[in-house]
Amino acid sequence: MTRFRVLAFGLLTVAYPLLVYLAMGRFEPRWMAVLLFALAVLRALTSRQPLWMAAAAGAGVLALLTTLLNQALPLKLYPLLVNVVMLVVFATSLRFGPPVVERLARLQEPDLPPFAVAYTRKVTQVWCGFFVLNGGLALVTALWASDRTWALYNGLLAYVMMAVLFAGEWLVRRRVKAAHAHV
Image 1 (spheres, rainbow, N blue to C red):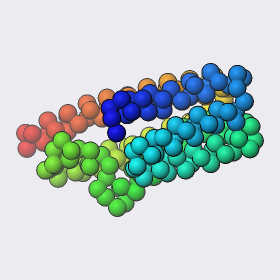
Image 2: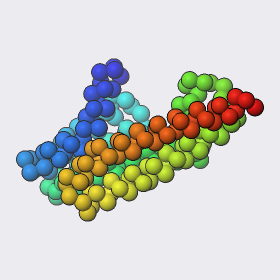
Image 3: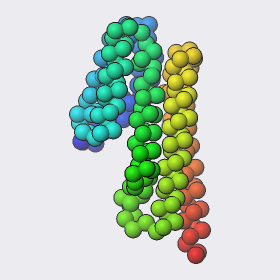
């Protein structure tokens, strides 16, 4: 996939809550379902990765429910779906290995030392916890919060939390590496 497509899909995915929020009250939810399904199918077809195929199938169910019910709630459940898919990917990698974070680390450092393998397993577990928390908050905002709160959390705060987790993990990783460099 070209860098432009990756960037375009990334931006559309990140902007999804804002786009849904801006469309609410202007378009019937069933028409917004087309956006959700088209985005998911295009992403799945261009990446051909099982992760995005599963997300597209789930998005298809949400789009179908939106079309049948003509209600926005299924559209608002998409961030939950993404967190569930990511949780399944990360959790199954812990069970059947190697963990996702280890696979990513080996792209830069193919011969990881044992302490790094153990560390990447813990980081994968932390990401599983993040997906549970973030997915839970996505569900709570979809079911019980205002549309504005849903868009604020899923379109901004969830990404801020993710950035804080990335930054925190980077700082911890530096300390772990430094501690093992002197051993």
